[in-house]
Length: 248
Image (tube, rainbow, N blue to C red; front, side, top):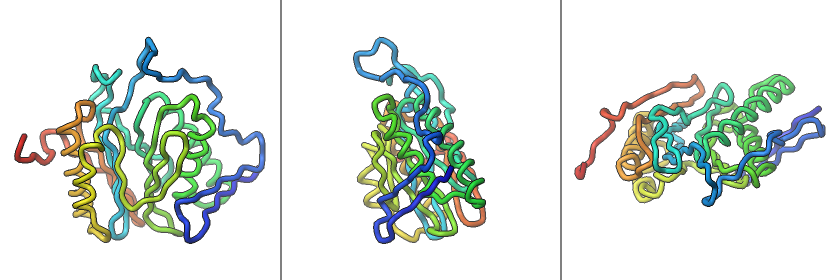
């Protein structure tokens, strides 16, 4: 069984993942209920704000921590939506929490298998490609999207968006979830390449605080992870310590 991941140089947004054995399946193995508007049962949803941004030497990925049912009832204020899928690779989840947990669990397995076969840590593009394949192969059953971010020795810090249905795009900064609607202008105006780690952390914290202040299904604390060549740093900003703006 051989897992091969390749990305064409000069077009980092395009990734191809090939699997040479039929036994290495991207089928999640269960028939998941579709989360349609007419459904009588509403699943737990991470109506959410997620983001990732590259700075000089690393990347920051983060999210809020609120989970809700049907956008009406807050089922948890402390959900961790920043999931570690390998040593220096993390992903943020948005959409159905059950779907996202199933996908990230499968992705961890695939990446562990891949790293054993290759005798080296997986590339960030490999992790994003695994998530892409899982989402695409199960697109009729899933309602979940992901931001993947990490650092590797080949390409340094990277950010990828895996959208609903399996689209894969590489970007220097990206936001997602219901709260992102309120901060596109802020992100466009304030993000700049080659920020320091401190500047990027402040940028990410401000963006999450602004979204959480306007989006009724984003809230709780700001969970942030800083990923660099030297390691991983976790930063949690409690709700009462988030930046406050003039209208609050």
